[in-house]
Picture 1 (cartoon, one colour):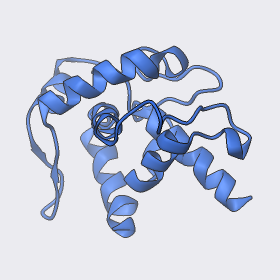
Picture 2 (tube, helix red, strand yellow; picture 1 turned 30 degrees about the vertical axis):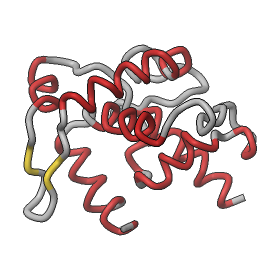
Picture 3 (cartoon, one colour; picture 1 turned 90 degrees about the horizontal axis):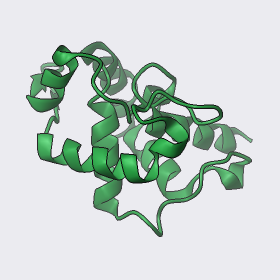
Picture 4 (tube, rainbow, N blue to C red; picture 1 turned 180 degrees about the vertical axis):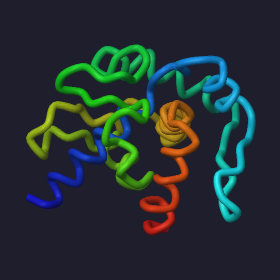
Length: 146
């Protein structure tokens, strides 16, 4: 049961990162590197983010909304939901394996999307997170799962 909840949570995280920048400041953040902490530099590869947006629009937006804002039952991926509470590893697993085996509705994407496409989608939705959310995620979640 705990594994199922973790997988569902991971799925939510993956989906939350798929929204458009809310304003020019968020857009600028997505296009230029920003130091998040003294130990970690936020990846902001604009080409990777562009590719991720395209993959998201073609495959994920129908359930998660065009801007990753979420639609029932698909959760937001844009930083406004719970998705950022999960590690990259968990988000990748959720995208790859889906959540149907856990009682959720997300299909598995491992046979449709390449590892690079999954990485790009994750970069795109994380580019929608504020620096504050990204820093919290990195320090409280991601760094503890390495």
